[in-house]
Length: 304
Image (cartoon, rainbow, N blue to C red):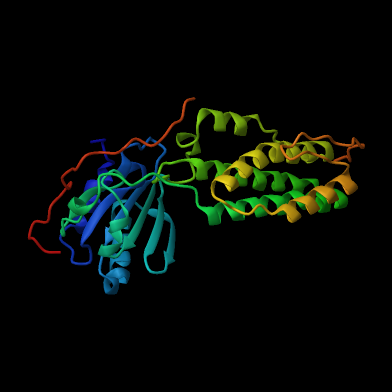
């Protein structure tokens, strides 16, 4: 078992006998056992629906008593997500859920801190491999084509700072597409993509240009991103039986060719009509997780 921050046991000792909490688990990288010194600490807490507000208030009070909080955020829906950053810039997140909602997790993705209902024992050892989500991929393809086409607007208006942002959006969509190809079920947060992407995928991302706000640079970056994105997206669309937006892509290609002199093929090899610039490793996946482990602390009075 990896060494947990001392605050984990401190929180557990404060909450284990409180009726607002039916269980508390480490999740994220701490739950999987692959945390590093830069990781946040993620928790999943179980409570009855009518106790969510009380549990959230108690969580904040407990954490504040242990570490002064300088940032606090709440997101509420069926469940409650609480994000905290302490004055020493440690990050603590807790997702407060109903007991039945833990069924979508596995022993390899969470570890019990305390578990009054012994629900951890009912979980499967591992989650099944993830498969690409056709709805997500469809959105990524259409959004990529839309942003690529908006290059004509940015170039036409000379908004090269905006086009630098556009290349960032396209790069994000390419990264998201690569993550759809990743079979790891519990992908974790967005701050460690190199843990999930293959060496070849990382090489593609690292090889892309990062443009300055200059016409020739932003056009070249858009083209490089298109060359990386379209073949991969087509393969995935075919795999998922997604209807390719042929007319949308064709219209985008036509306008970029007619207005900017940009042309690239179906597996794009691009050429740019030059005009003066305006002033101005081996796949790395999350480890399979830990075997069944005992809670870190137990209730002293048997209460939930």
